[in-house]
Image 1 (cartoon, rainbow, N blue to C red):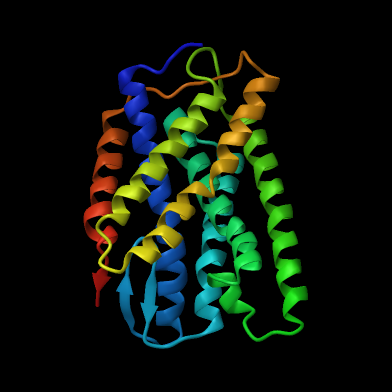
Image 2 (cartoon, helix red, strand yellow):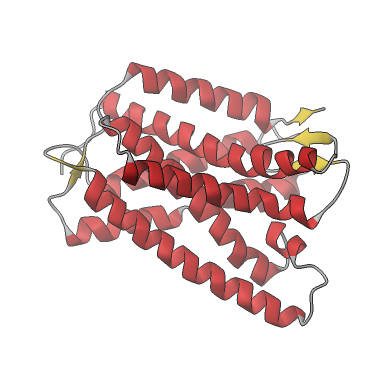
Length: 255
């Protein structure tokens, strides 16, 4: 298997950083923060995994994962309908879709099983409780499986190239980059250790479906390759994104 060149590998990592950043902003800032402001509340705190508003509402709780899903689907539609010519731009849209959709769909499973998190807050108090949680968990599993099928299909149709790296290598590198970024950001969180362990790492680890999709495509089509051309522009964007994500959003913004 042909390995990525040092430049191409750095570019892929940078694109993964940028894509994960968009997925995070969609959930926390646009979703939770945007709904907080739309309902007349005051934004108090915003970080990579947490938003605090002066008012509390099911709409605010649900807006985070819903906006994440919407942004993910918009990236997927863009990739399908107006496919960019640039391989790196296609990779960015693809990874934005994957990180956003897997994170927010898996949240259904997590909330259904643990009774914690955004979706659990949305259905809090609804009866019968057990039925709601089972339904939410099953829905999450179905949607997660669908997301993996969409991811695998996109790899087959949007990225075939004459040379490059395997889909499994591509998805694995991107996944590990996002997990490491979220882990580093967790070290700067001004809150307690518990939210770091509960929120930050799982938000990136939920994209494991991305790696599985890459593995299945590679196993079914061993010759398929994904090109990630070296790009100083994307590398710079990714580096700037990572610094802002860790140093600013990692610690959190107080308003």
